[in-house]
Amino acid sequence: MQNAVNFVSDGLGLTPPEFAEVLGHCTETGQVQLDSYALGGMVEQVEQKFADLLGKEQAVFMPTGTMANHIALRELAGAQGKVIVQAESHIYRDIGDGPQTLSGLNLIPLGAKRAAFTLAEVEEAVQSLLVERVATHVRVISIESPVRRLDDAMFGFEEMTKISAYAHQQGIKMHLDGARLFVEAAHTGADPTDIATHFDTVFVSLSKCFNCASGAVLAGPASVMKDVYHTRRMFGGSLPQAWPQAAVALHYADTFLPAYRSAWPIAEALFAALDAHEGFRVEYIPNGTHIVRLLVPGKNLDHFRDLLHAHQVHLPPVDEDGESFRLKVNPSANHTSAENLVEAFRAAHTASDPA
Image (cartoon, rainbow, N blue to C red; front, side, top):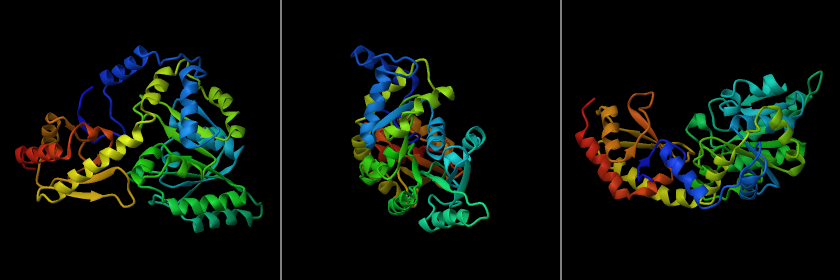
């Protein structure tokens, strides 16, 4: 395995050879057990592992998070149910109106241009539907946290718990798009179950923190999950074999949280040193998690990025503003020390061309 530090991905950002190396290790150690159409074998093991990590009765493997979110809303809301979502959520903005088109669901977006909506906004939305000439009901409240479109800012735990309590009082189901739930848990020091307990169903991505090429899990009560296998099959999600994703996810399932929690202080020390240097400026995301904005004024950022790459430090493409990078902290920071990272950034700054 290479010892590069990447500020690009939620996880280690494995290259194809590195992914193959991990998979090879799993097979050589006898860990691999084949599944059949995403049933049994290692898939069953990864389902049980994430059910335990999330404190839920049952989990089901999904090929994508898009499918996991859609099926969760479909199972919880029923036919033509109304679902409250964030206006900036992945479900509302990025999945091609799948729940509306394929399951007849009606999405109600709240909290435009914000990571969160408030309990007051939820109450108003719910009550306004009950006083119409033909009363209708909100069946599900879906929350994404962290919110990808807003630089992985968190929804806010206090407001989340208030909304969850209200929802359960009203008989409304709760779903968590927790694609990066483990980032939030690692960053805040919470246990994933502390967050997941406020939701009926929870989706977690396997391709984000757990370094898989693809894959997801959807977890919840057995009463809901018992029908999910059929729905997954109906939507074409029962892959002939899903053991490669399951094997890699199991390999990293227990290590992401401690690895991130040891990586973050290294990154914090780097950011403090860069912010004290006249050639850099670091901006933290309000209520953020692992993303920070790095400005390098007066420099050719593509050249600066290339020079850092030669030091085995990988940055994302230059941001749309043309003057900054959005860096993602992940366990790859453990591959070196804060001192080495500071030295690499300073050397690249000195050697890079002016803008």
